[in-house]
Length: 160
Image (cartoon, helix red, strand yellow):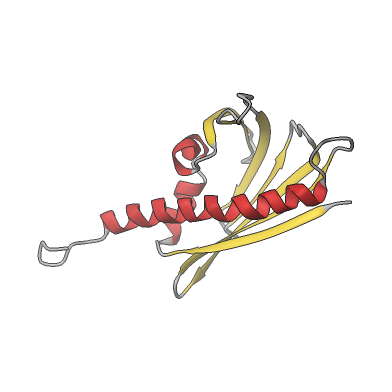
């Protein structure tokens, strides 16, 4: 049975900065806390980027990695991504959406997936895990982007 998560956060920063920082895949190890490496494998003619993400070792010392394909659409401020090397997932699709609001940019991640059978983690357990971890990562990203935005704000009269 398929599962679905839907998490969002508002980032008080300009849209262009949020878009640029969150779509710079190679910087993800500094933007997210969970990735130790992000390697671009290929830039497709259609705008799709194929890349490998590697997690920090887990409690048992196991290092997990996978390949994903990501296609941003700057015109609609959306991104569609899917795991190409699915690992424990039958499939994993992620939709990112960026909407301008009065308070800043609302960044939303929708994840649809199904786990392979016979694993210690089933669909419901993975949904719970993602619903715990995604907000943590989104808050880290928000804080880092807002810090960059604050540092780049013009200074009135030479005083911040």
